[in-house]
Length: 225
Image (cartoon, rainbow, N blue to C red):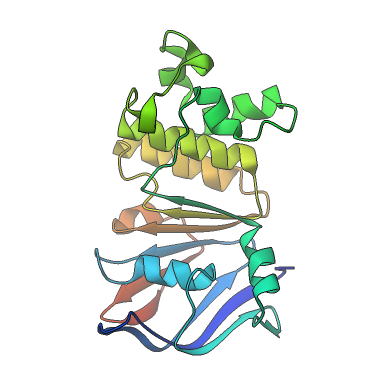
């Protein structure tokens, strides 16, 4: 269980036959806090996320959850199962908006939870303006709706899914600035003990974070609040 901190200690990482991204770097993720990660395109933000979520392994160094070093695949999978990971590349199935939010056909739909998730993702207005509302078919690869609308549907899915850790990797980059700020406010308001990671190339998006890091020139720099 993730009770206090996830810690990357003295991490080295490089992609094969390429320059090193990180050399002897450290990073701490606090449970229940909002952590912001900032950096220019190509600086290594997504690489850091992939290390935190065990999608890739460091060349050197250790990763701890609380006091335990994470070594076996079973523990890594258990940790991954408590994460909702949203990237700028939205995944939609060729189905209705409703089914794209709830995804699972095995469980009974919680209508109140669904309505709340849609409002928190600021998706209610555009959905209500569609001819079939929640039953509107998004088309192949979501081609019948805009990029910003796709991202709001996926964010509503994250609110509905409601796992312990929420990761947003540039997940609002197609949404207008005003709506984006509203969504971030809602994420903080509905935190309820969740651990949230927000990755952005826009530093102003991270103003409300408890902890902030900048990735620059292969260094993970903790910023002062």
